[in-house]
Length: 119
Image (tube, rainbow, N blue to C red; front, side):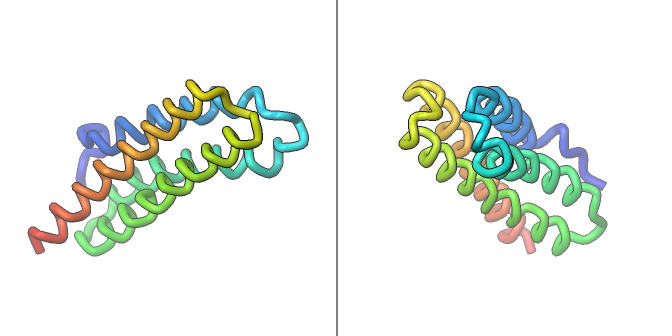
């Protein structure tokens, strides 16, 4: 079993969850069950899938569970862009959220590529 807490990808994903929750707290109430919910679910799923994948016995399962959060991190970056263009996020909040989502996806991509190279 792998220790997810030692992964930089998990640290970044965990930070992204907190940033996302804080950023979406001020979204309009009519977005509570739409963009707010979608962004939060995508961010939480990144960290959650890293944790679940780390607990899987096979390398193939682990990789499958790392592929999912990579996609979700790109999703959060895009949804942040939507929120900024709608005026729900300040430029500063958007840049911080997008940068963390992009960094998370890059680190995940590096981890995935590294593991696939070892097979």
